[in-house]
Image 1 (cartoon, helix red, strand yellow):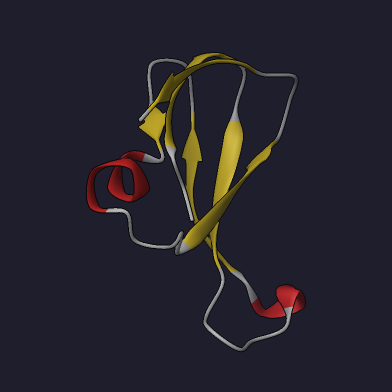
Image 2 (cartoon, one colour):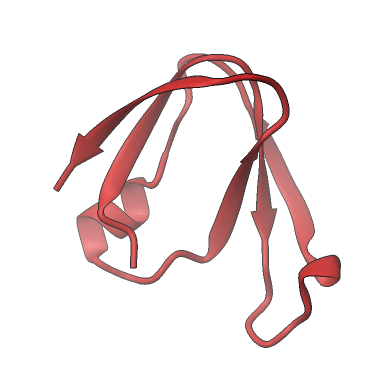
Length: 67
């Protein structure tokens, strides 16, 4: 379950969709986030489990907003 929204202030990160029940090597690249992008908003607002994973491509700095 996700409880935070993140604001990316420095660096880049990739968003990967992981189909339910699929092994990690079958994940799908969805987007590359750059400074100013946010992620985690759907889990924060709806309480739904995460449907994607965000992995840093470079060193990143983020602000985290708690529920």
